[in-house]
Amino acid sequence: MSNNKRGILDMNAFDARNQEAIANPLLKRRTENIGAASVLFYKQPIEMVSASGCWMTDAAGVRYLDFYNNVPSVGHCHPQVSAAIAKQLATLNTNSRYLSDVTESYLEKLKSTLPSTLKNVVMTCSGSEANDLAMRIAKANTGSQGFIVTSTAYHGNTEYVTQVSPSALKNGSCPDHVVTVPAPCTAAFGNDVETGFNQAVVEAIALLKTRGYGIAALLCDSIFSSDGVFSDPAGFLKPAIETIHQAGGLYIADEVQPGFGRTGDCFWGFQRHNVIPDMVTMGKPMGNGYPVAALVVKPDLLETFCHDVGYFNTFGGTPAAAAAAMAVMDVIEQEGLQANAKNIGGYLKQQFTKLSETDLRIGEVRGAGLFIGLDLCDPLTAEPSPSLATQVINGLRDEHVLIGAAGPYGHTLKIRPPLCLNLEEADYFIEAIKTVLGRLPS
Image 1 (cartoon, helix red, strand yellow):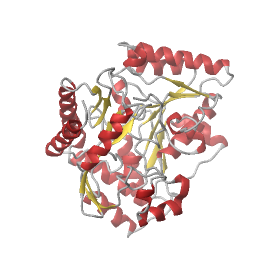
Image 2 (cartoon, one colour; image 1 turned 30 degrees about the horizontal axis):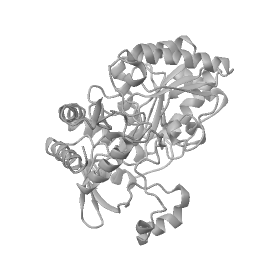
Image 3 (spheres, rainbow, N blue to C red; image 1 turned 180 degrees about the vertical axis):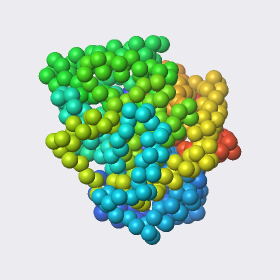
């Protein structure tokens, strides 16, 4: 077992030095075209050619149950979403400097799910752009430069947002204006996660002030996905948010991964903690694969920022983007996907917990709805086992299940299938886990 920390892009990634795999003509073209920036899943990358619901199909006709990709949140190639995009593209798609009833109707629908204080929406194409803008707004309104994030957070890939994404850094650490705090876990804070996390934020604020940056914002993914999925106890974020506000900083809720009903209990992850953010960022599942993202913000904060710097996004909020996003909202509501996430997610969590009672290689089981983290550990020491996680991930591929990893050591299976997952598919996954673990030394 190795406790070497792993970057988010290194987890379950294809190694370009694998000469056997590079013999694949399509892979060779990919490597030559994209070079060092190419990131592919698995030791033997898969060429996918089609998808539907929770399943993807490769070039050889093999079907895979997708527990990996939370972008097609309401199901791969959902016909209602696809039809809405196609219809709008065939009618009109232009930049956001024209009036569009499609766009305004969507924004009103989106705002109806959020606290009433969050009245303005800035549409972007990616969560990275949304977080970048949120950070700029925080600096403009507080006059401070400092940010607090968790120790294995990921918030995007612009230059600015990469600075607050420690899990994306292969070498070095975050710059001085960024202070990390431990993920809200029992390993760091014992049984009182709420008090421990708040104290860590207090100390981070003091450190930023000592360094001369002050506190601009606490930026949190409210399911702490890249940290390893930490959701409970519900409400533990509230004292830390109050501490940030008392210190003059803002709270940015990154809902790119936990938003749109995935946690089951609530439509937004932050709602599980009974807090009201100053800004909310969202993306990925927003358009079910169509590039749609947004920042929702209190009007006074946006007005202060726009007094000195304007903002315009050519493709953010186009009619087609709004049509895609509206269709996603309609499908979530019409198909009861938030309730499904709660019910099927609860069933999965129950089954994993039951399995952990007889298999010591399974450690903590955490999460809410269809966002679950399952730790894989050395059965003798209970320490993280990234090597076991790698074996399980590749073993699940052999069982036609796709899944990824999270956490600082890459030992946490990150379970986030489409929200339309049914009971039969959940059981398929459970049996696949049992089969793979049964083949490995216990």
